[in-house]
Structure formats: structure tokens, C-alpha cells
Image 1 (cartoon, rainbow, N blue to C red):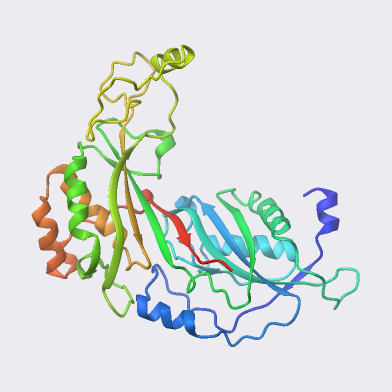
Image 2 (cartoon, rainbow, N blue to C red):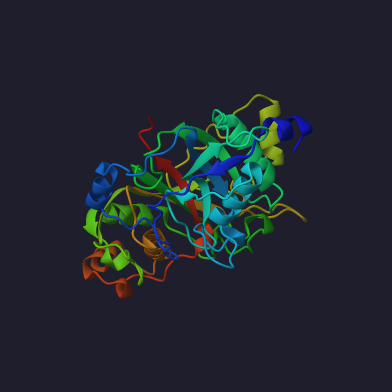
Length: 362
């Protein structure tokens, strides 16, 4: 941190909420819609002193080296690393509260948490100063995060009222799951970032299976043992499968030549819905030293709340449909069985990403 930044940041003491949720290992957003509605309607009894500011933080992280998001003793967790960075920033311990708990190996494009901070003057102990601007918080915390592996980063910060809870105020959550299809060995750049499926996947069949699962259902068949939700009923607002360009993606010789000539490299291809993306080179003879790409499929699941391992169990069934091990009618049978033993093996954690948490921000 530069000298200017060091001198501009005063020490801050933190406020600990008496209503911290209990630590539950490896669980997701367990409350039903009605239960979350009741939580949102309950006023927070904590009366904050003047000068305490609640910040809402959006964070991204690579989950590979984390034992999940929630604080655990003797384990490296996302919350633990964030709390450590805040401690170094303000000189006092803080408590972070996440909108969504993610398991070991699960990534986040944007998870959200909140933290309470009180800014105390360094020169005049006991004097409460105006809260830091969100941009200062973001810059300072990221400075310390980059010194700790650099696999988590604050991407946005906003000041919110004292009763704004990152978990209970969330209106919906969107998850993405990446599958890479093809016999080629998985690229080093994709290690622990996607599920490698050697078989070809039938996109249209997977899309048809999604139609069976979307909507308001008893998802007992997609609820792992240990789920502490009171009800298996959930409303799945969106479930679909899309094929996208595999990453990292760099232009081929043909694409570079066409772009230099100002031509559309994809014009006149008469591409159908089931064709791979134009940049897919899985069947091409590329020559020595050039790697064939996998076909990349992304499952999107959107709902207000999910059961424990629900998304990964859904993906496991969709993958089985894509490979032909299951047919679309089998999906309806599994859903109606209302037991997790009827479902296909669960998809691994490495392909799952928490994509977005939606709020009605003040």
C-alpha cells in the first residue's frame, strides 16, 4: 500500500451483530420462500451507534483452494480470508455475513456479503469519524487480498442501511455450471474450472429435460443428505443449457485473416441450433503443437433459494440425458420419486459458479 493510502486510512473498530447465523458446514440457502419473507419482515433489533457503517460487498473467487465460503476452524475459507483482510485494513476484527454459502471447490463470479465498520480517529482515540467511502474500502481490502494468494477479490462495494442483510434481502440467485465435452485431455487452463465429460453431449435433449424440471416442485430427489431446509419445495425460475465458446479463446489463422479483410468469419455458415460455435476446432487437423478445443456447455439455474447440492444434482441428471444414459421421461420419473437415490451421480464442485445475487437496493 502506498504511503498516501496508509496515511489516509484511519483505524476502524468493528461492530459484531448479536444475530450472527450459526455456522453450518457445507449448506446452501436453506430457507423456504415463506421463511425468507418472514426474516425480511422482521426488524433488526440491533441499534447501531452513530458512525457505524454497513457495507455490502460483491466478491469473486476461485474456490479451488478454499474449504468453502463460510468460516471454519483450521480451514482456509473465503470469509476467513476476507475478515483477515479487513482486520489488516481497519486494525480490528470484523464479522462477515454471506448471501450464499458455497462448498469447497465452488467458484463465484459474484457472491455478496455485508460487514459493519466503525471508523475511529487514529490521532484522537475515541473520536468517531465519517465512514470511509466505498471506493476506499474496495481499494484497501483488495490490496491485502492480493497478498493472500490473490484468489478472491472485492468487485463492488456499497453503503447500505444497518438492517440490510446480505442473505435475507436477496431476491434471487443465479448459478452457472460449466461442462467441457470431448475425448481430448482437459487443458491445464481449465483444471478445476469445469467438469470434463469425454462423451459427446446432446444439447437438444438436455434442453428438453430442463423443461421438466423448471417451475414449482418438490425437489426431494435433488436434495442431498444433510440438507437442513424445512421444506423440499422450491420454485426453479430458470433452468437451461447453452453452448458457448470454450475459454480461453484465441482467434484461428482463418479468423485472423477474415477479420483483417473486414469480413464476418461466421457469415454464410447456415449454423443450426445444435452446431458447435464457429471457433470450435474439435474435429480439425490443426497441425503439430495446436490443441483441439472442447465443446463448452453452460447450465444456468436461477431461483430465490436452492436446496443443499440441488444445482449439482440437477446437472448430474442433465449430463446423463446429454450422454444418452437417461431419456427425458426418466427425468420426470426421478423428479416424482422424491428421493435422492433416484437421481444420477452428483456433478463435481469444480464446474459450479455462483453467478449473481439480485437485490432491491436502497
